[in-house]
Length: 223
Image (cartoon, rainbow, N blue to C red):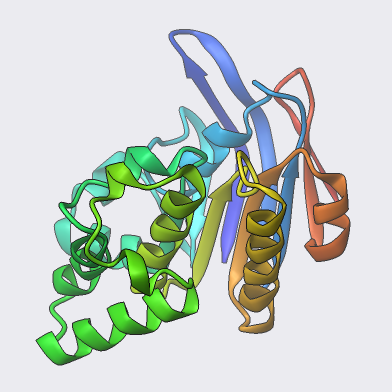
């Protein structure tokens, strides 16, 4: 489903990824492990089609993901429905006036009927335990509530691939337990999941494979 071959990327000439070759199969859960600044977040951005290899190739379901490809509106819309992204800091991806509107935005962009949009929003609110937050503005929420809202917004799109950057970051014990259970639910549902983490216990519990990032910005694949 996701194939990276000899991928390199740099910020202003400073290497962030060096010759990364790795693949994630349909339904596989992959943990991205390594020190801060080793390239984990960069790779997740690349997998989401937000940046593109400067060298090498990224294939998604057999199609090369390039800047030119992602300028094709129809393809980009389809791609972003297939691949969901939960940022480490959820506040950067929340922009609507209320939680309800935040969750409704994606399904509305998919062209779903008003009834289907409502059903998806209600289901996601209930699944994430945030029904009581529906009328709240996202910027007024706690960090844990924002995290659940961001997850619920992705959930309404029902993507085949979930990418999560440090999903347990800044969560209390209860929030971390809920998020871990959520990742297990994605795994049971057969979703492809890529998540970055410093928590080796989480990786041991969930991952089918580990992409281990080195200080040299290279990746070792472990299965």
